[in-house]
Structures are given as structure tokens and as C-alpha cells.
Image: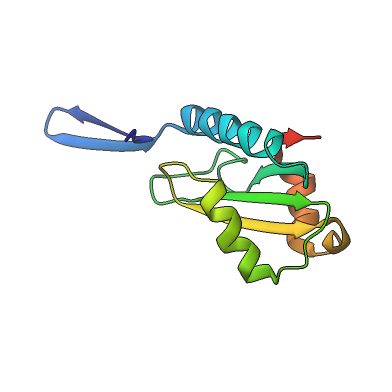
Length: 119
């Protein structure tokens, strides 16, 4: 199990920081695997503090997954995709369908986010 939190001792002080570059690389690899393995996935986007270089050790990774379709309720989709999109870091998933793209969360993610996968 790898950690994305780096610890360094400087004299009597311990300093912790989040290795954002390594974490984004792992999220990219995971998104590529998930996206290529499921034809229902249109796009996967990283957004929020990690995409904007503001993440700290207590942050999570906000992941938008755009699906062609899904008849499952939103909360059920979160559970389903949490099993598929798993890394050793806290993740908050937002699995929306193409029909739900008018949602403000989705629009913000599309504008400010980093595309990790796209069909």
C-alpha cells in the first residue's frame, strides 16, 4: 500500500505534504483502466483542490465520471463506481449521465478540471 503523504524531518520538526504529482499520475492510470474497460464511460475528470494544486494531506480527490446512460439512482451509482475506481487515497465520486450535464457540479468540473480519460 503506497502513501501519497510525504513525511520529512527537519531538525526537530516533522513536515508532511501531499505528493500531488504522484497522486495525479495514479488517478490517471486508474481512470484509463476504468474508462477503457467500460464502454458506458464517456469521460473522467479530476476537479477540485487536487486539480487546482491546492490539495493538502487532508484533501480528497474529486472525480467526475460521465456515463452514456444509467437507470440506477445517483447514490447507487456512487457505490457501484467506488468499487471500480479505487486508489489508496480518499475519493469523492460524481457519476453523472450525459442527460445530467446541466448540473452546476458537472459544469464547474468540466471548466476547471483535468481530463483523465475521454472516449
